[in-house]
Amino acid sequence: MLALILPLRAGYSLATSIALIQFYISKKDREIVLDNLRAVLKTDDNATLHRIAKEVFVNFAKYLVDFFRFSKLNTSYIERNVKIIGRDNLDEALKRGKGVITLTAHIGNYELGGAIVAALGYPFNAVALDHKNKLVNNFFITQRRIAKINVIPKGAALRRCYECLKRGEILALLGDRNFSERGIQLKFFDRDCSFPKGPATLSLRTGASIVPTFITRLSDDTFQFVFGKSIFYSSTGNFEDDMQKITKSCIGVIEGYVTKYPSQWFMFRRFWT
Image (cartoon, rainbow, N blue to C red; front, side, top):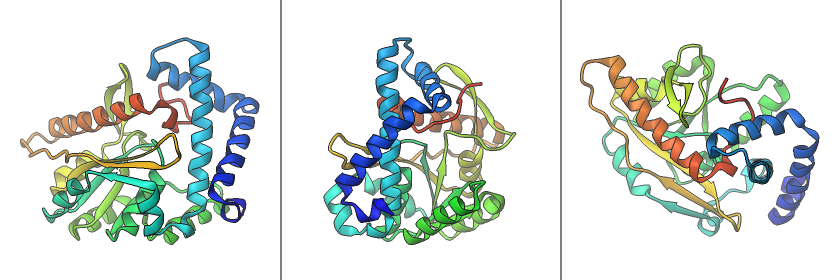
């Protein structure tokens, strides 16, 4: 595989060229990304939208290069290429003994973020949706195993999520896409959207803190990995109301990151319907 054979910079260069070709030939993906960015940036300026959309394609291609290279990930790479901020927020949350939900989104290099957490010695679990293509799915499973990520298939998610939190471990959840028919309706960039109940439900049921966790690419292709302050909400006894308030806090954090890093929000489906 070229991503493993080539030096990292050469891999990024090749990926960039392929991404730009994909941007021009894939009208469907291009239009979806442009529509999503139009809502985020609140602009109809085509030059701005196309420039940032191209960056989305390029950054996603680089994300894939990093994913393919998980076998090369080690502490030396992390020390050279990743600036970690707020790790004490994660450690403090873990000390509560209730497990931790790391909340992230399709922003930056979330797969690499999970691999780094596992490489730092934390017991790390992530819920993942199976790919329809069996070969692709098996490849993703293999790469995550290489990174020592314990993958929880969506079909077995709920029980195993409770189990890992009960053991005091980390559970990673993506908060910007609802895969079920039953979500929470909230505003996202002033538009109605459905969000997953998982983070709020699990936090309320188990007492686990939610730690916003985002790894974003910098201009020199190194990374900034931020563990934010815990979102912890004591139950009032009104479960639905509590869940709504927690989810709203989570979405507020995600919206802030999408606003700051629109070219690293990898949403290749129409977010608002």
